[in-house]
Amino acid sequence: MIVILKHGVTDDKREQLIKWFNSQGLGVDVSEGEYQTILGLIGDVLNLDTDMIESLDIVQAIRRVTEPYKRCNRKFQPDDTVVDVSGVLIGGGNFAIIAGPSSAESEEQVVEEAKALKKAGAHILTGGAVSSKIRTHTIQEQNYKELEFLRAAKKETGMPVAKEIIAEEDIPKYDDVDLMIVGERNMHNYPLLAALGCMERPIVIKRSISATLEELLLAAEYVMAGGNKNIILCERGIRTFSDYTKNTFDVSAIPLLKEMSHLPVIADTSRSTGLGRLVRPVSLAACAAGTDGLMLDIHPDPTRAVKNGAQAVSTEAFETLASDVAKIREVLCK
Image 1 (cartoon, helix red, strand yellow):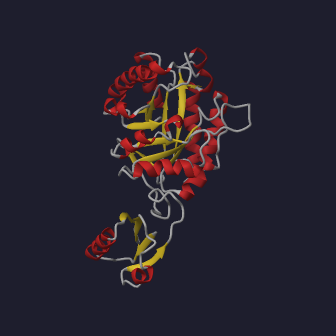
Image 2: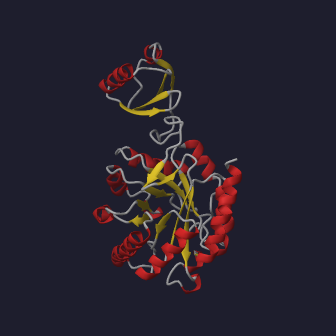
Image 3: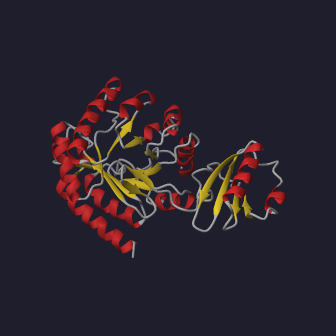
């Protein structure tokens, strides 16, 4: 349930009402807009006297929220959430490109790639990827090695860095990572989501290959329940009957998620199709659909990449892509 307060309500009266709701065993999520304040009520509201509440002189209206996701619901917060990733803003009209080599092979390679990507228009550096082809007991060891590559690149270029996190116990090792990525395999890893909810660090939650939009939002809800509102949703392709691409990129998910939720939505257009030649057209389609950012796999020479070369685009191709994206956004923002 949401309670919409009238414009110009004093802080004292608002706090009195919030304390009363708290005394009824309800949590209250406050969303302050330019012209109105919305109180989102969390908990069992069935026994509330809605007529009495609506009769209060500071209350404009009451609305019931039937969707199971509450905190990330657009009804709870009409204004877009803007996530600040160490100075890079995502959401609310702010756009960012997160790019880097999925095949992070050496410190030198990642540092040089970071320099080129920053010059070409990337905002956040990422590198390495969790792959089902890597033996289970070596995944974390590989992740730690790639973290060191990213740290060196961050020191050299000043770019914020993003890295996929695998398990709850890894969180202390990510202290200097600006944006933590919850991969599609961990969208339902509730201990990890709960631990990330206790932090204020920005995180990306990728949609699982078989997840509905509601299930993705419920994963975000689980994090927000712990207090962390710095969440970015990511469409990265779903499993369908198509056998031409690695996954099927659900471009309709972008505008739908932005209708359903106030959280930023970005698109991973490399992993969604698994084909480097499709990254540019799919990225432009995502931009036209209103995405708040792109996540791209870039490699100096995809044909020589140790892994995931098929889904990567070259650094040179990225320069053209970044320019085309800027043109699309210029048209959309007019």
